[in-house]
Length: 220
Image (tube, rainbow, N blue to C red; front, top):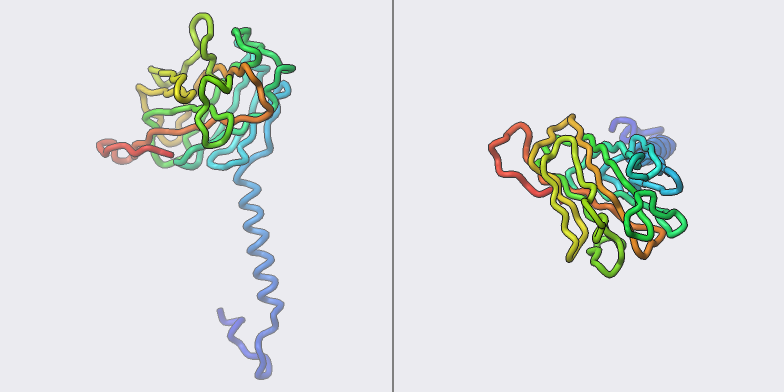
């Protein structure tokens, strides 16, 4: 960098330039961090946050009932797990889906593929504590023990399989969602021992869109 090497009457260059450059770099880093995730979205008392990164929430709507589910539009930018933080599901919130659980809501996720790879499968996993499987005893599930049919669905994937033990997850498959495309996923989230915060871990089974003959990788 010529300005740092140029002498000033035999002495070192003034430090002001270095300080200014550092300040600009720091501002750029902070701006990038601010853009990386959006403000949390609160709907009918439930707050959804993309604070852990890998995706961003674009908008949300709905009340959480079966007829008017929470709808989250998300842009997924990373191939690793995209972890949605959910807060506010308490016994006071109740259960607008009217399943046989203390608390719960219906959720539709519209995920936009902003990565460079196709999604062969899309899995959702509930965790009461980050990184720890949700088992039967914590009460959190995708409508486990629901009387009648569970509300799993998608506009693109043709199959959905739920697992209750040793973890709570739903895997959608049977189709491919390419870069720039979007997919909607419908589930119900219930809890018989509600707590203020829990996590929805989103993973995709990947295939390189440009090379469809390659063996797919596992994202996350």
